[in-house]
Length: 345
Image 1 (spheres, rainbow, N blue to C red):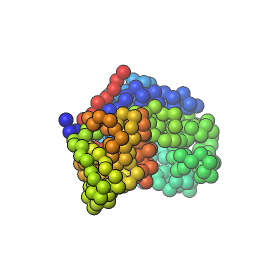
Image 2 (image 1 turned 90 degrees about the vertical axis):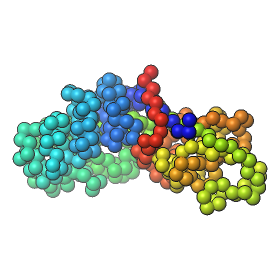
Image 3 (image 1 turned 180 degrees about the vertical axis):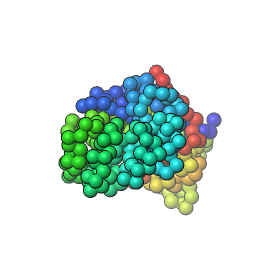
Image 4 (image 1 turned 30 degrees about the horizontal axis):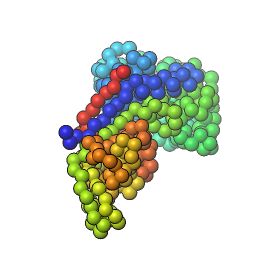
């Protein structure tokens, strides 16, 4: 079989959620946007619900409607993008909670869905989503009179605990929300790890559930194994792959494996990437192409049937470093071509 295999360890994912929940001074939700960071909403969300998660966050209303179909009634599902034009029917029918980002969204919500639950998102300095302090000051009393289910903001630099932006945003959020009755939320994974001052009433762990930094203690969740199609002997002076970017300096055994950038193995990893054959680390040679990768297996005894890209030996953040990106992009880039296995015990 020449299909790369993606294994998702649901017990490990749930253990990561429980650990972050135990660290939280209050309640922990679960962020499952982007198809549960590319790992499959239909499998990940029920596992988290069974582990005890009762509040979930998605990016857009369409994701929320799909999540409601999967989970059924009960769990609260909040939508980061708020109440966009045309969302009313989805928000109503799927019982979603939009996180209102502006006065315009607030007006759209109270006019289109009077009495329907909502939350408020504030901009504490990231300049991405939410009401800025002046906008919030103008709307605060009116909005609070409608009894929002949550008032939240989002940290820009929580993956760097010593970054001064964290303390700045904490002060800003506290100033904007002191004295309100509604529950408050500021932190995702990084904020949880910075301690109780950042927790407030609800935290929203995301990347940490899936095994990514900054949650160093996270259990590995994702394994990628890639079949070996062919092994050849390459002589000194011969090249491998497009553009002749790698030239053999010694006799080299080269395995061609069946995956590439069409499977989310980013081409920018080419110069830094390694795969594993058992306990032997093997260098990627030349350019990663759409469906194929060349790998140096000279030091491997028997020809391997498959090689490990992700798993116990290297994490999504290892791959991200090679590509000059972040673990989030690696996870959400894993494509539909993998044969997927979900571990449940």
